[in-house]
Length: 187
Image (tube, rainbow, N blue to C red):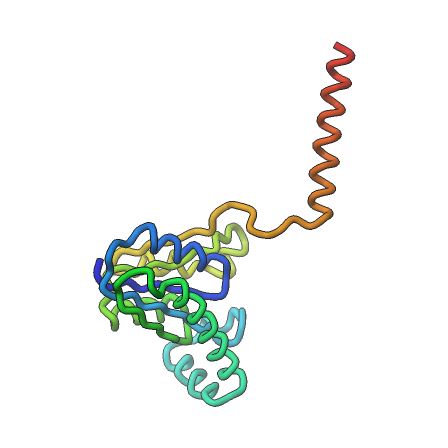
């Protein structure tokens, strides 16, 4: 694989995308980092816009404070992941920002850049959340003509425990040990 497209965002899933890249790809010539700005937050209506309506929306947002905020956030996200990839190999590194429907934009960039592989993350939503929000990773996998690696967030505790969590764990453990002791005493 010579040209790799890595899709990143501001979620913890993107951390696993970078480690998946390091573990799965050997000596690429170039790596492109892509961040797709999702316009208008989490509105379900945005997903119903066609190409013409999306172009009109993008044009109307150009030069607004909202768009500038999105651009600053995109730059911050891409800079963070650039730092993780710089000096980690002899490949050229570039970054791309797009806005619109994430799966569509990812596939457009993959085609334009003529990449050999796409690496992106999956949030692992299930049930009703997945039904309502869909899955960008699944959509890209189904529609891509090139290999796609979907990195999933590792199932480990990354957040620090609160004192309530620690108290609950100690209390439950103490009760189990006490119950075992009493059971042993009566038998």
